Length: 187
Image (cartoon, rainbow, N blue to C red; front, top):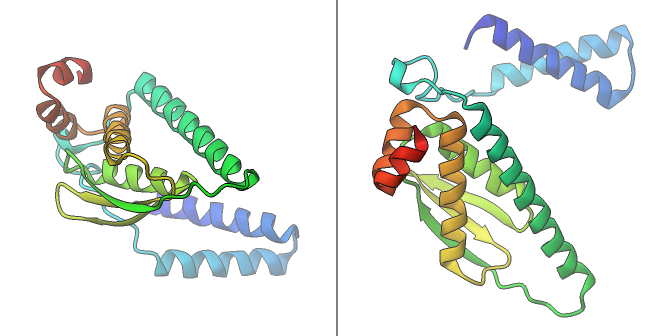
């Protein structure tokens, strides 16, 4: 990771520290810098296989696909919040938990990272583990009614993330796994 990028992250951590303490004093700035240094020194930032390697492995942002991906995630977040809110305010307990294993179709570490984080961000689901290459993601689901629905949703999320910011090789793997129609759509 470049020094410019690390310093940008460090500056953001200092600003966040100062906002959390709501204090703009010299001591608080120094404390923020110390916290940022400790966090950056202790954090092992992942080296994704799509960044800084061969041209076919670089992440490529597709603006329209990115907007669609963000809209999809927003809709899923709203839906899951409504389901969870309904569960809280109704007297009947309809919780049916379970763990679902979903093999992803690409070897993209970026896609795996995005899917795992969006799953954990969504109320009612949490990523337990991601293993292998291509990755298998294990998800704990609070309202498990149909395993295939969960798998379809996660594979759709993977597809949208690869289309939004996947490398050429990740897009090719996705197209190969979804057939000829997927190849036309992902170009």
